[in-house]
Length: 548
Image (cartoon, rainbow, N blue to C red; front, side):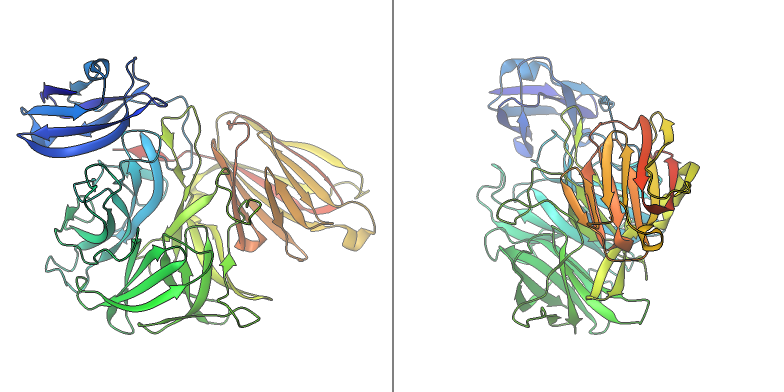
């Protein structure tokens, strides 16, 4: 099918009907292909409209080719404003795109007083396809400014994940405040790019990350299969730029460069169970000053070791026969001990560049709800630290300090008010409508002092039950079973939002995400407990603000 339409306005409104058959639709002006989309083109009234910014083609005749039906084309509109797709529900404290599919965070960088957040984005539907880089920015994680997408698919492939780095040494000749963005051009992952293969490319920004311009040449050619997700940083001690690249299966390559363009392979490392979306950074234990380098992968597995600018020497396990692999996330596994992707989880986390001693991290939360005009949200910002434990050094994560500014009003309750510690206590702690919550729970086992009996907490938050048993030292919520360390006092922090709960346990050594089973932030918080001493604080939270 082929039709033409004159661009009398800035935006081309594209009708989308989720669940119908895919169509490959291509857009041309003056015989030149400018965009291709894999989209769901129904014949009935669209469920919602996506949009394409065609302001560069105002007044031109656009040709639209594809395996679509005439009735779908008749629903295309041209307007000077974007369509409004408010949707019935949106998260209150988590960032979600205005419309479309969100996955991996990309190119996180703090520059000129602003946190720039890029992420994988399908602006033409609520499923994985048509990978762009979307952009939003914030100065405080309370107010966000969304812009149009900044990297688009082209004839060489969709724009897959990558990283950002400030070109402080002016290697690219665009000034020391230029930012270089390394990304994977995923050749062969679209009809348009079927003659190409995966390569690593660069885009640059000279306006503090607001707009990106692609450079023509690849900096790392195709290596093997779907090699992707370049992580690039400057290593001060060796005066070199380092790239960590996922190759395939459980294999990563390390490259080195002096000019950000020419890269030399230095190392191949194989770590069973770790794959894609690598991050690599140094982290220091405040307690004793010990510095480690961490290689991080998509599912939250990581390993620690030393790095000299050429080689990463990963630490071995206790037996000394394999690289020691650790896990920060509490994730659900299947019968083969692999991640069960049917459950919501954090994924593909990356840290921000340019934050000095602070190590701030965001991940993609894989939440998909049927009645939303978006799919996927970003985690709350977390701050990483290196903790010295009885088992060795481990990475822990706790909520970024900026999140405390979301608190609007607070409530607290002392646990173990009764004289008889082991008679169950019941309390309704909160009742409200339409506000996300932060819950801080500090508790210990009263049996250590008062003798025998049960020691448990049942905390119900908007109909989701958190069951804590200090006999078995375990937290149960949804499909999760989170072990508690053997400590005198335990700490648990929960953030409750419309789509998900985020949990920080064991002083940040365990992090988990689970579904909000009620799909609501209206209702009550209730507690039942026995054999417990401690306190609980509940903070009602203001919603984040998103503007253009």
